[in-house]
Length: 149
Image (cartoon, rainbow, N blue to C red; front, side, top):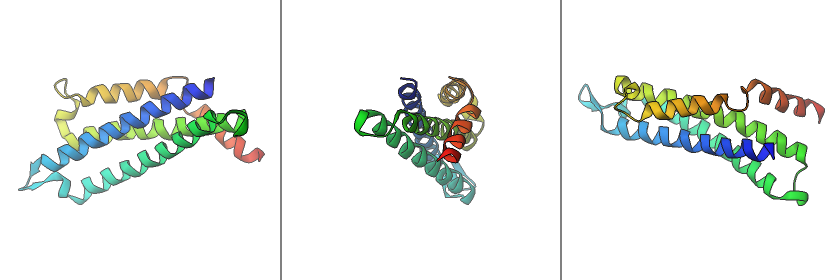
């Protein structure tokens, strides 16, 4: 049961991260600086691509974990599902926090004001990160499962 809760939380975090990325890409495509959109600057492009890679990795892990949890007795063992859930929790948590932080950076000062919705995403990413303990325990669980096999 705990594995399913972690997988559901990780799925929410992936959605949160994806929305932050969408908002950052949209803003970077419209905000003008020095006569160009800020999305044309290499530093912004690299930031956004790194976010996309982190989100895609987290999403793939969440999908793998949820698929394993749904297979029941035909699929992976409960221990393997727990390992997949822990891995998805870590990757999704990191992706969500990074996406919220980087989206605020792309938006500049407006990103952290009460008038802009990004602060809600940042606060939710932080709350999700702390929910069910910090990620260290989950990193340890994944590491121990790798050394046992």
